[in-house]
Length: 132
Image (cartoon, rainbow, N blue to C red):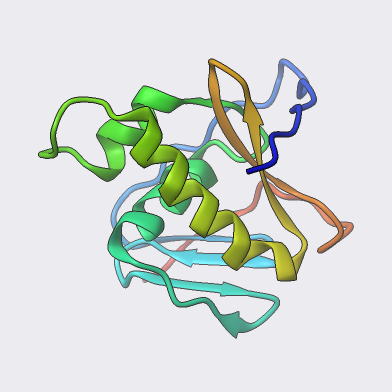
């Protein structure tokens, strides 16, 4: 598994706080939080429940690092205690599902992970919509 460094993002970028019925959509990645539905460039991405929860948490803080333990607790709230090796495996699988679309999951060693746009788009990656 390859690890990558994650570039520091501007200080004024605040993680998004999303509520029920909200959708993350930046034109490249779309995550419908209430419907367990993810598309990249308009194509459906089949994810396991844990992978979906991981991408939800990473999307809520896109272009920011999320601590590994926070990811684990979000995706596996009733699971065994924090298991870094298991988290690596889930993120490895998720990374390979997103790479064909140009999305990247970066690893800041001994800290956490961040979701960023690689070659997938040129646009703003911080747009949130609320569905009626």
